Image 1 (cartoon, rainbow, N blue to C red):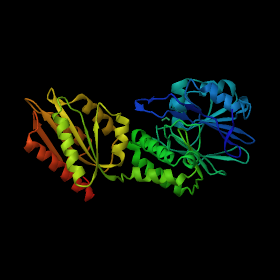
Image 2 (cartoon, protein in one colour; image 1 turned 90 degrees about the vertical axis):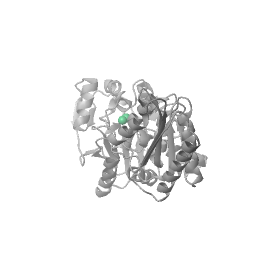
Image 3 (cartoon, rainbow, N blue to C red; image 1 turned 120 degrees about the vertical axis):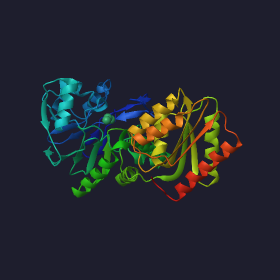
Image 4 (cartoon, rainbow, N blue to C red; image 1 turned 180 degrees about the vertical axis):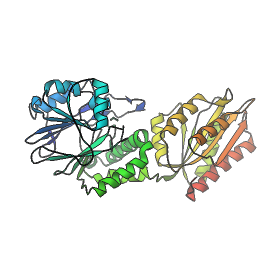
Length: 402
Ligand code: FEO
C-alpha cells in the first residue's frame, strides 16, 4: 500500500467504500470513503477509525507506517459507527491507547461498545501535545451528533472536521486538487457531492454551522487544509468554507422546482404547465417525479433553489403517500428562505392540497399560492397552472421571501 501523507508526519489511513450505494437512506451512487488520520510524532495519535468491516484495511495502512500497538491516543471525533465502528478492533491491538472524546462522545462510545477503555474527555480549547505537533480540540455539537468535535493540527494548520465539509465520493485520489487538475469537470463532482452531503445531513444545523465558522475565526484558527472523514481532502479550504457559508445563510439561485407525484396524470399535467409558466418567464425550472428520482438528489436541488412547488393527487382524502414521505423527510431538514406553493388534483373529494399546506405550515412555511383541480384539468385550469408558474417566477426574480 502506498503511504498517503497530508504533510510531514500526518497520514491518511482510511478506506474507500466503492460499493456504498445507500448511507442510512441517503443514496450514494458514487460510493464513499471513511477517512482516518494517523499523526506520527514522539507520541502517535489516530484520529477516527472506519466503518465496521473495514478495520483490517485500516490496520494494514497503519502498519505501513508504524506498529499499531504503539498508538498512544485514539481521538474519536464522532461516535457514529461509520467512524467508531473499528475502534474495538484497533483497541485490541493498541492496548495502551487512551481514547480522546468529548463528554458526550465518551457517553456514546460507552453505550455503543460497553467497554472499560481509558478515556480522556476534552472540550474546546483543550490541547494534546504529541511532541512537535499539537492537537487542539473544538467541540462541534450537532455537526453531526451532539458528541461531535473537530481536531485541529495547530502547527500544520489542518482541520480534521469529521462529518463537516464531507462528501460521499469514492475515488483513488485523496485530494480535491488532484481530481481537479486532471479533469476540470471533476471539481464540479466534488462540490456537487459536498452540496448533497450538506443538504441531506447538515442542512438542519445551518445556524450552528454559521456560529461554528465564526467561532473558528474568533479562535484565530488559520486553516490550510480541511480533512473531513468522508471524501476528498480540501487543499483549498476557502472553497468549501465559502460554500458552507452560502448554504447555511440560505442563499439560493433563481431556480424553481416542481416536485410531484401523480395517479392518472392530472397532477402531472398541472406540473408540466406550471413548469412551462416558470420557464417562459425566463427563470430556470426543473421537474421531479417523486417515484422517478432519488429523494436525496431532489433535496440537494432544494438546497440551491429559491422556490419549491409541491403537487399531489388526493388519495383517501389526503396527500399521496410518496408526497407525505418526501415532505416528512424534507421538513426534517428545515430548508431556509424558500418560496413555497402547492397544487394537486382530486376526484370526488379533495384533501391533498389542504394536507400538503398543513404539513408545510406545521414546519413554519406559508405557501404563497395553492391550486386544486377536479378530475382532469381543462383549458381554464391549465391557464391557472401557467399563471401560477408565472407568479412564482416573478416572485423569484424579485427575490421575495416568506
Ligand atoms: Fe459520518 Fe455522522 O457520521
